[in-house]
Length: 457
Image (tube, rainbow, N blue to C red; front, side, top):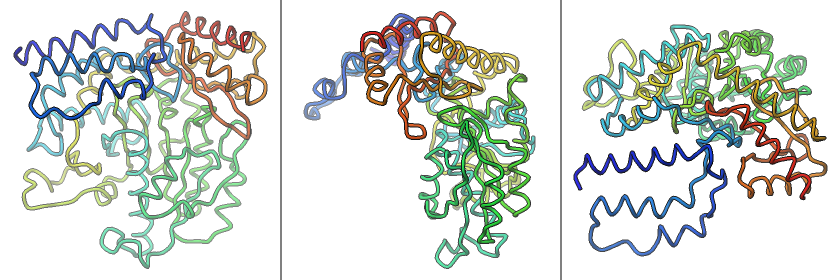
């Protein structure tokens, strides 16, 4: 079999799988332990024909595929994958481009630059900001906080890129009590440590308490300060009062970073944009593409309002790097990796497929569907614990043990898949509506499945 036939076979298998998602059970029928034998065994001493390898891979994997791209997967804020974005990602693999700079891939660089301008306009961020295409929210937060580290220490007279952190002024990181855990991990990776965090109390729906923020910042110690805010609480979907919080941060000379993995997309929907009012006043932002934009995994954006700071925190030079070091930052100047996928093609395709109005409609529709979930489950006697402002719904089903039992029953049954979470000391079913393919009928089927499980458990 030649390469054309091999790729056509792979595309057929992938297309058949995607077409099966509306009717396919969401839970994979086999777990890892059951799959190890299919994938395992000793490495063969001799090679295997490519066509046989593909067929063996399909046979080994198919029983362990979760329908995360399907319309009734509501766990972990996972989006689907738009048709044009999926096809573009296939092309990106076939083209095998590495968009470190324009010597490696002029097309990859052009796609990312154009797409960056579209993203900034959609999200209401400064058009002079730089955008690094990263793997997701963790990497985006890390890049944003690396830029913050650079700038606050430079202001204090310390060159962290040259001298490291030994002997450096202590950096204070102020963050909400309900920040995403990736903030803490980014601080560990950057050598600042989680002990640098000065925690601010959270209000009723999980947003930062602005009054307590004033208290924490005023309490000191004075010195290099980074303020981490949130657009889209991971449990409730609520957004911090960004305008007020940024203003308070500015009074104390803080670099302001916004973790907006999914919630920042509210800026693209006129009916929800008020939730992130003032977001453009921050210094850096993190947002995912593989969540609400429905771009295939893995894709995120590290955005910085100060291009010189962004580049100083991320870039490096070497004599062999032809095409780097010019007046305009190259994609490789904005992210930690030199070698990476050309993510810009799929993002460009997704935005072309949707257009600005389509992105807004996608966000608004998911929010409406989340509200439909809440109303349907509340009508069935279940507790809705959060104010549903975006796409997140927290559902209480009696005590913790019962909630987990119902969750397990729903996952086993396969109509839909939701995860569980612990919020303020209690277990809840956590529903995240992020898929462009999800319909009202999908929500209604899922509500019925959950209420049926409640009756049976």
